[in-house]
Each structure stands twice: as C-alpha cells, then as structure tokens.
Image (cartoon, rainbow, N blue to C red; front, side):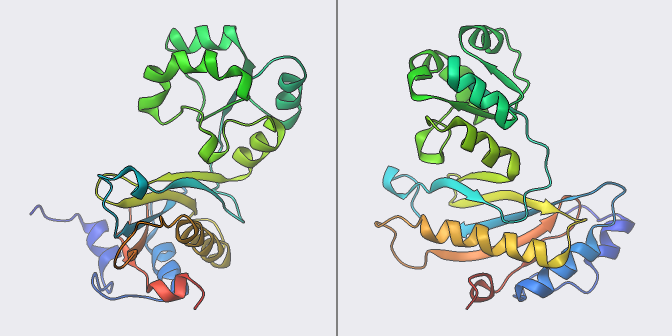
Length: 232
C-alpha cells in the first residue's frame, strides 16, 4: 500500500474508517476535510444488496436534489417546431433535430444531459452507439424522453441527478459542493437516499441498503448511519 501525502494524512486524522456517523456529523467531517484550492464536489455512494445480473434488480432513476448539485449542466434537446421553442425558452443550451444528430455523429458532444421528445426517438436511436457508452442516451425511465421538454430542461438545470446501479451494486452521484451550507448537503443526502429507497426492486432480497458513505473530491470517505439518512 502506498503512503499517503502530508495533506491526505492530515485530513484523515481523527476519522474512524469503520465508524458510522449521523448525517450531520458526517457532513461536518467531509466539509472540514475539503481543503483543496477549488470547490470540491460532495459525492455519495450507496452499496445495495442487489444481484445486478438480473435485469429486474438494476436500480435506475432520477433524483431532484432540493438544493441543486452545484454543477453547471449543459443540456441538449432533440425537438422540432413548438417543442424546440419550448426547450429554448426553458434554457436548453443546444436544440436541434437532424442537424444535432449530424453534430453528434461527427463527435461534437458538447453537453452533459440529452433530452428528446418521443417523436425524435427514431432519429436519436441511430446515435445509440455514440450516446449510450457516455450515459447520454435519452430514456423515458429517467424522464429524458418526454413531451414536456420545458419541464425536463428546467429539472436538469435545477440539479436533477440520474442514478444507476453499477455491476457491483453500488450507486453513486455528486450531490453538492463543499461550499454548500451543512443543512443543504444534509437535505440533499436524505433526498438522494430517499429516491434510492423508492426505487427498490420488488425482487430485492435481504438487506437492501447496506452502506452509505460521502466524501469530497479530494477527501476521505465517511460512513453514514443508514437510519439517520432515512430520517428515522
């Protein structure tokens, strides 16, 4: 095992890697540990008791963070006519149809979220091999294939974060910035954990929520006592 640098050793001092902390204490520790020269992202990771080899045990959805993610999200929308105007009015960064498809095919993907109206999916479907691996393919399960493009754009811009279980059963996302007030981060933690709980598959057996941890971009992970994250 490699040795930690002086800064890393300093921020890890006093943090028990095994202990479970209430949400408010965990947030304080993580904020105090975020000593980098930039505004570090606060990340959350949940270990779920799922067998992701089964399609019905893959958790996927979107969470509306009450205090936003602190991240600037560039949104592209595949839409035409009135729906294109609606997307632009809502603040979409890029709006188009065939012209946008050509940009993507040419490798110009200057956006973080992709939304499409249902009638555009035959067109967008051709881009599956390009958008899919990047996690950008519109999907009705997370609200990115919808006739309500204005609402979807505002949601994406306002801090909605998508989530999906990895093969190991872990779900992770950025839920704020180190500069956020503690209460704002706590509220985002509870909102995200709540969204994961609501998405629990019917076929899940045993303990569903095994572990929760939060960290800053450059800081150590701090484990959270699950009941405190559930507001119990």
